[in-house]
Length: 170
Length: 277
Image (cartoon, rainbow over all chains, first blue to last red; front, side, top):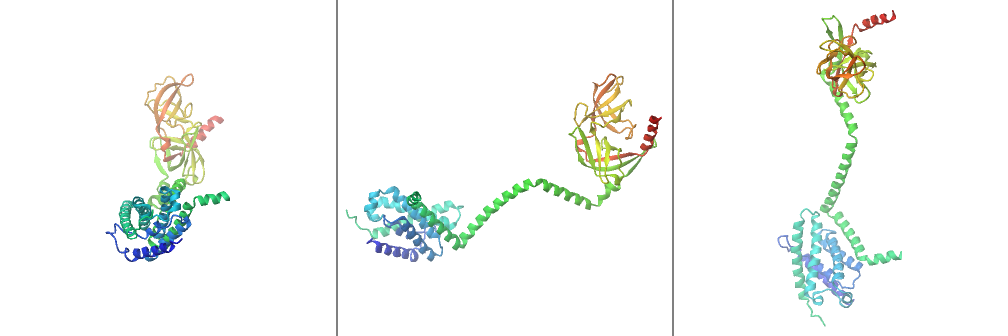
């Protein structure tokens, strides 16, 4: 509960970076980072599903309003929230869910966080690009773009996580 | 109800996912022109292809009606052709038989209904009493004898085909003019064969010999009927039964000539007076 202001600050910070810094950054349109998903990834373990979905939906919607693509990012973030629930259920034991506050790099360790970030970013980007093109006729292109963008996003996630890295208190 | 709540709370991640996915999807296709256009277009394409399939099925089921309409359209167009009156105006062709000084009138008619598979087969033609067809006239095809006019209406006439169990035609062998009567349906109902009855035993019959009309009845003499395909079929005591392969293919008959023996009535009246005496 005492970490709520942190999440709010993280939300605004990430959306700000996304909208004003990363909007025009890309690698030949092949690789576009969407760092704002880090906000959804770092939401607390104990958050109820309805709150997670609502926050993800609203976060996507915020990006949509500025990108003028109403519904696109909201849809991708909904898929991402679903993927997050699945991934956490599969990889983390219940007692860890009870004791740890959030799935961040400093808490969960590099190996777990890399896999988590990469898979979630890939899922989000794949959904995003698929529904952006709204056709499966160039699925190979979508796949390549999603993978490259997922690595780009993961790289930015690591940068941000390392900037805010805190030694895990044992 | 309680179980339902348990079920919903157990699977709330999936259910919420579908709710949020659906709402964002609706947002997406309602507010983005490209996605909306693609959605509606693809659904229209799908709907159109379903319509196409249904239409194909309907077309197949309606083939008969379509055929009928095409046939009537054909008939209408044929009527517009300059030759439309040809068969009617040329229907009456005078053939002067200079040898016997007999006169036969020919009427050309189109076969509009035909059967070959029954025990008693009939043909319908598109000429009737208005064109001068009368009951009892003989009917010839392009290759030979076809039958006898049975009933006449103003515009149509039915023909008792040679392929009729009651039809008897006076026929003779071309080489020696021995005559008998040609019947069909005695034993077999093959539309290609008939039987020549009442040829005496002593007549020598060769296979392949021509069978023609005798000239004793409706038909002019010498009209081909067919060829002998089998001899010596034992019929009665002193007579041969000869199988004749018919010259006319009844199944593909399309035009016939109705022949009118102008002196037939006189001949019949004279022969009738023999009996009354």
